[in-house]
Amino acid sequence: DAGVIQSPRHEVTEMGQEVTLRCKPISGHNSLFWYRQTMMRGLELLIYFNNNVPIDDSGMPEDRFSAKMPNASFSTLKIQPSEPRDSAVYFCASTPFGRGHTEAFFGQGTRLTVV
Amino acid sequence: QKEVEQDPGPLSVPEGAIVSLNCTYSNSAFQYFMWYRQYSRKGPELLMYTYSSGNKEDGRFTAQVDKSSKYISLFIRDSQPSDSATYLCAMSLSSNDYKLSFGAGTTVTVRA
Image (tube, rainbow over all chains, first blue to last red; front, side, top):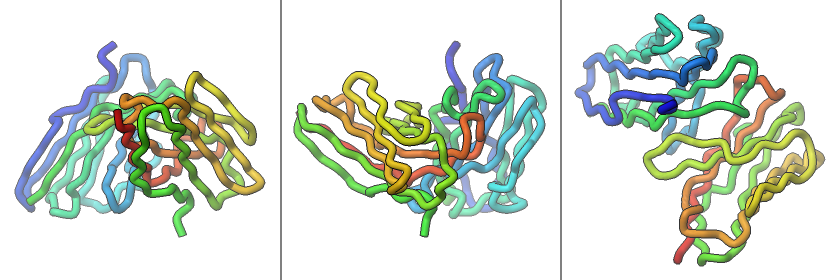
């Protein structure tokens, strides 16, 4: 398996534009997580899906952020409109259901810069 | 005060030295303690996890947990340049708890 695949690896966009980040979890993994990493705040959990259903989105910072998981092999994180303070590295991670983070695998991340 | 505090570093050591990394935490309910390694421009990868108090050894890596002091450590023996990375501690309430509390990470450089 190629692991968790995220795209794009880098994204530079202008303030106000819509940004869509994509994630393909490892096949057979039921749980998917979106994280944001910044120097100031470290690694923060944004949203957690189990069997394609959002279970906990309390970490989503604002209504400008939305996430979907239309099927077991694909998830998106959308920011609309984007702002400079959204600049960060966004990670997707997946794990078999109920295994917590002892078997979690992270993607390589999307480095987002909003100018 | 953050729930998990981690020595910020950065840490620079010569090859072969012992690297010592630490985290303290405030929530006494944490039961599972993890160390992640993150290479530059990569995602974190789980290095070791420990349940409750005690030591766990895996090759050159040793994780220690002292729940009475709310203090965890990671030691890297015979450090190699390939150990140069950012190390993040993380902890959770149970083994299948999806919510982890992360430390900010310590960047380690092992000089050849």
